[in-house]
Length: 390
Image (tube, rainbow, N blue to C red; front, side):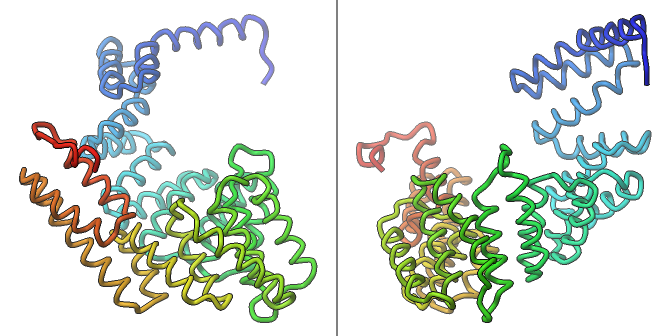
């Protein structure tokens, strides 16, 4: 609404006054010291209770960063009992999900959406909860509602595409990924995974009937952007070639075979560890392109790197029944758990022996590697040169 010079001066004065009052809190935030933020909030509230509302969110964030989950949950519920606010609903829902209470988190988000039906972030939170509960289809519906409220959010479009792809709704997946690629072209959220997701959705949509010329051009444009902008990323170079090969499998099998060979040659000499999702996709595409042995090798590497993740191993098990892959993973997880128990009990030599056994089965598993390093770096040990080299 219109305002005059005096009104503007008054607003600026209030802003400066607020900044001055919050200065200790903001300085502690800049130093990334949540304990100091909490102390500064409490001190300001003691000085003048009228400023308590200004401190609520800073205090909640500090409790979260300090991992004081129970006090944070009680604090957020107190805020909501006094006055419903979107950020408090979102923080409480996120906390409950983190603490393994998805049903309670779902109830919080559903209540929040009734109170604030135009806040897309609340729909995002509900979608996360529904994914955790295994209800991917409803999560997709919820995200579609969020996209209608805020259609220009690149990351939300990408997540919607991923959910729709998992639900085998290839039409919706293509549409969402296409929007994310277009909107993210000049955005800091531009991501090669979005282009690869679009290509995957379009190929899956075509099915066994193959792809028309227009779709092949769209896939090629999406993949060319990734290949050109990430020339030094071997993983992305492998994946773009395999995706292109999959798109040409029916229309140009000769070119598809050449691209597959190029991808396999790069894969053989690659030191980079693929993410779990990328490795599973590469394995599936290699098998689809007739390279069963290469696909099994990628699955084995995936199990070695992510064998302690039940969700990943469930996906691996759905793609292979090879006991050499599945049983080695189970044994490595058991050794790792025993190592953790020994470490917590203070028996470092025994813990290190278990971690070494686990690494013998899964040498690329990041969790086991970090556990081993932590046990070696534990204070009070006289490490020899061999342990230092290890």
